[in-house]
Length: 257
Image (cartoon, rainbow, N blue to C red; front, side, top):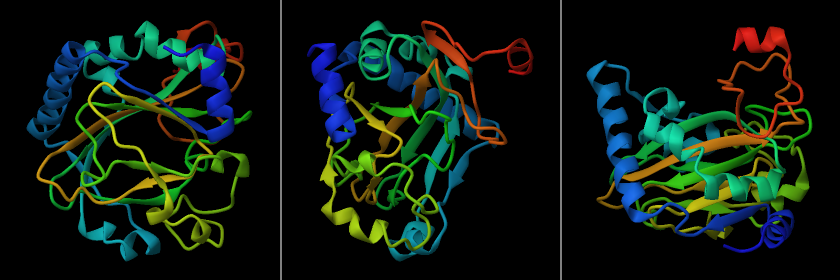
């Protein structure tokens, strides 16, 4: 693995970092089995959220006619996924980016269906769960292969330097986002076990899954132990310390978590 300094330097310059083969094939087979079990459990309980991301821009690229299956907090369904987000090599890379104190905000399962799996227009993530010091990053664990045809992630290197751009999560027209079209972004194809880390200011998105294969990912949102989510934000917030300490935790917040 590259040195922590080289990882951090690349991330600070580009706003993303890809860790190839971070999870071994045998581990990914177990995690895919657990992934499929979670999807099956949701179906069994009638709790499958086959969502559509609405909005004018999403409609223009056909997003309102396609679907994606997702749920928050896979660690609440499966110990294997709890262990995965505690995996030392995974946290070593997160530490290279965030420092020694690493807090889990949430995880999210995404299964992009075959042939017309939902695209995501270009956007930043900060508006969904803004943190006070803007240390929030995402780590996308690729459970399946993710090719361009399968609607893999696309990013604009260096776009994190824009900071908190004013837009509505990419769902409505924006002068800024017009400068960052989906077709012009860097394509990040991946194999099972690859993990894409990116800052929540980094402009990213994805096209439809146009293939006959399911695209499976688990997204892990992490922030520094010296940071916290802004008040009056109702997004799921696990507040789980994965490494080090949560320096801003209080008894009242801990009791309410």
